Amino acid sequence: MTATKKIILFDGVCNLCNNAVQFIIKRDTTDRYRFAALQSEIGQKMIAERHIDTAQLDSIILIEPGVAYYTQSTAALKIGRSFGGFWSVLAVFEWIPEKIRNSIYDYIAKNRYSWYGKKDACMIPTPELKSKFL
Image (cartoon, rainbow, N blue to C red; front, side, top):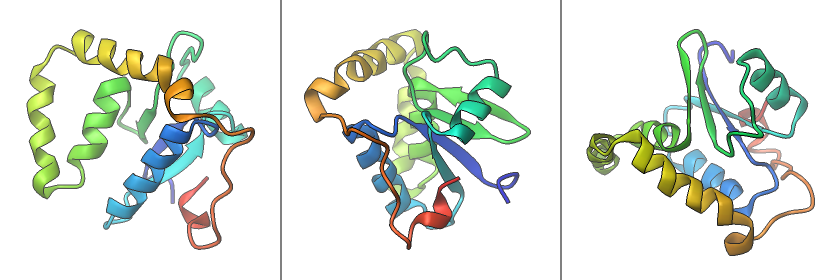
């Protein structure tokens, strides 16, 4: 099943990240995404399989199985654009050089706990949402 779904790895203790996951779920009308916390066993396995150094990369990770994976601003833009409609306008941000986009992304990522808070443990999905999480 996950071979046909795109996978979003996120910081499971970050309030901003958890809110972003809820935002994505509400707009994922075609059921294209599955989610896993970076801290989870499956998240760690997927990171290791792709040789991603999370000490150097504090980011959301979008995995398209059998295709590629994306991080930081590129992952966020690809997810946002997938909603279609008005969200397609996010394509204009791809004209901004990735280094500049990622510096803004990194600034937000660096401050996310102080700005939005942090949970003591990863979120536990409700029974209705459990099928969306790996």
